[in-house]
Length: 173
Image (cartoon, rainbow, N blue to C red):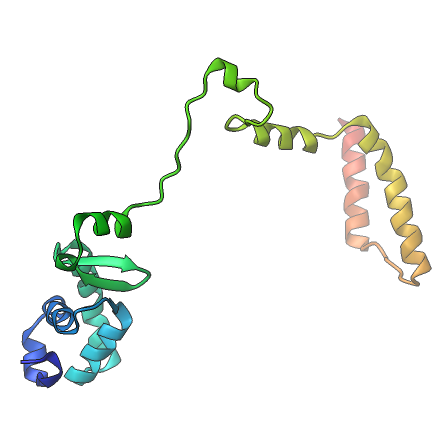
């Protein structure tokens, strides 16, 4: 009997994982997980809430049941359909390979050792005395641009008073 001919009672008697096995066996091709769930929902006449309570267990079962194979983003098939080589291709994780360097390789200008670029980036961020001298002139340039644009920036009195208090505290220390 085809799964599409099941009654609600027959759907209720079976777990989604068993229904998935039957459905995939009938179709003979990979199926999107959400299409499969929608099919079960339609055949069984389930509400969204009823499906949601079963989907968590279903997804766990798909991942742990050796009969099924994830073949891509939300796509599932039966493991029996694939050869060992196909399975390795479909489920092989992307592995980053690193070559082991000899002492001679370390001097090559084309090779950056792990972490080297991060150190250089950090060195670029360190402030120099020149940077500190340029701050005042940059502030003046910004103020000039604001004045030319006709924008007025007023300092908040609350912050001015805090600055005064901070300066007073520094003098006491």
